[in-house]
Amino acid sequence: MKRICSVCSKEYVAYPNDLKLGWKLYCSTLCRSLSKGTKVKRICTICGKEFIVKRKAIINSGAKYCSYICMNKAAKGREKPSIQGEKHPNWKGGIWNEKYPLSFNEELKNKIRQRDKFQCQTCGLIDEEHILIYGYSLNIHHIDYVKENSQENNLISLCHQCHGRTNYNRAYWIDFFQSKKLVSIMEVLK
Image 1 (cartoon, one colour):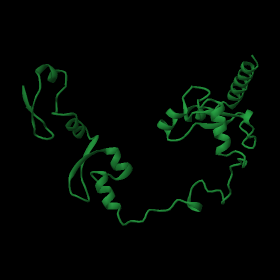
Image 2: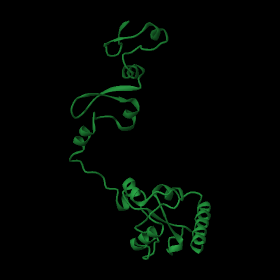
Image 3: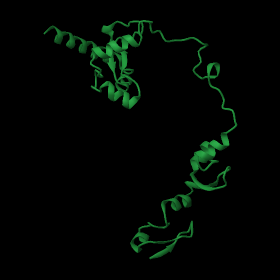
Image 4: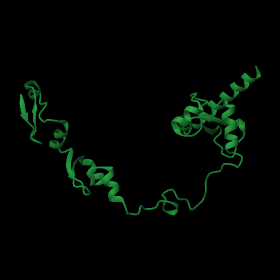
């Protein structure tokens, strides 16, 4: 059965059964959204093209542009606000809070990665894959969470994801890595 969409006046086909169930009242999901008010038609302030956005987008961002191209054209020439230094929300008066010793350098990190066979010590992800996925080598984690303690027996190689997990439930991870260290020592003694 042919019908005409009440939103865009386009002709479309709807089966009688669909109409009985309240389906296919519009030609598309876009027209249904427009009729319910969840989407709205807007006109781009740069190119004048008509585009459709969610009502939330208008509330959140104003939805003035039809594409990133038009948005970039509008931003051209405008100076972006700087959020460096004192203007940054995490500014702490210019104090560097990290307490890594000078001995915790790339040479030591590479030595730990080599000792751990270039492999994450929890999930087994190898360094080459880690570089492909994340763009950098495996992280080196301080087992006791004390940054000043950069002794080799306190360091372990972890992938980005596993290293992120170790920030929660620290007591568990300290025990986990300490027991892992004991197992590796016992294997060496055999």
